[in-house]
Length: 202
Length: 202
DNA sequence: GTCTATATGGGGATAGAC
DNA sequence: GTCTATCCCCATATAGAC
Image 1 (tube, rainbow over the protein chains, first blue to last red):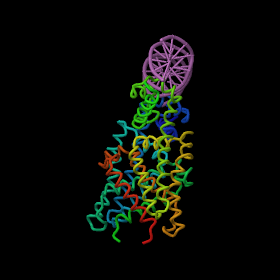
Image 2 (image 1 turned 90 degrees about the horizontal axis):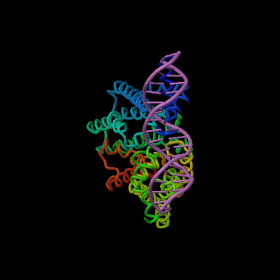
Image 3 (image 1 turned 45 degrees about the horizontal axis):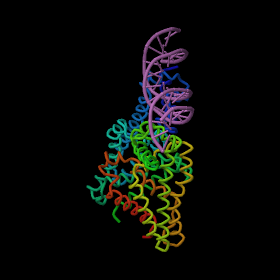
Image 4 (image 1 turned 90 degrees about the vertical axis):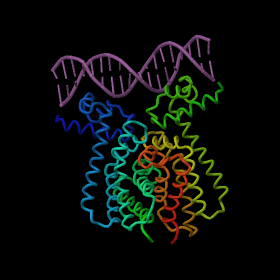
């Protein structure tokens, strides 16, 4: 079997199992079985289970930030409210399209570990920055009201992330399907409603 | 040592370690060491590690719901917006006062397990119901606008829970202290602002 | 109720053959 | 690159002494 294909099989099996059972709740044997691959190959390609997780996380954020850059290039002259809307749309859709990895990252982020701290400083702060920069520019341009930016951003990220982390809850208790296009559209609309109420002048 | 004291020591050591390292990331030996108690006593009193977790979860929600009942008894004739405000305040403060257990429950809820499903049906649906009932009554009374209740409630619970789950993120990336009184007050105010925008007539 | 000692299983990783 | 076999560690849980 081609090397790339083997690596891909391992990555998608791991993503699936980490998502369902958690990182600690998944064994390399189980990953190997799901990927129909010899378990020694996981150490061979990824230097162990943690390497698989790190690879998944890195490629998730690399893809996300590449898309954000493309969008910012496109939108650089648009009104700031529109730019904000587009960035929110991108984040929501991306999380929805990559729902399993979103959930596993958010879960592992909540345990105190070296990895979590690194992800926070490398990726999450940049993610937050993508939103807060636009709000700050809007405030400077007089387009938005003067607000405590960090706190608004936290509220937005809470709303756009929690439902994907608690996908089971959303399905079982709220009778909504968090992976559906329809849900992504509603979530985006709901967040923009919040942002309008916070930022725009009456 | 008195039996009750031993049980308490085990429970608080477990809460602390589950919070920091996750359920799977914590061993009974580690709990016993932290509690300064013989490790066999964990099986003796709680029928194993899972029993400790179940006890923590049950007592968390039992306390919460007892407080909600007291509040509802007090407030049963108040205007619905005020009742909503008080319930939100109660939930936020409770989560803040019990931040470690809040985080561990929310994290374990995101893995697919029997326990998670039971917690969802036993406790989380009731928790959600506490909020949605008030909104529905307010709509029926003409005090609130007609809105999709479940989705509003989901947005509220996202905002009031995510920051406690991602306490590290809040501290490291947002420079806020999620366990502080000040944070609880702000969070509550922020959520009420959202609810006003959604529910009240202009 | 508390302890020691141990049974039993599973985990991750790797050496070395192919 | 891939496989088998195995090493070694750590986990949970319990039997039985005190």
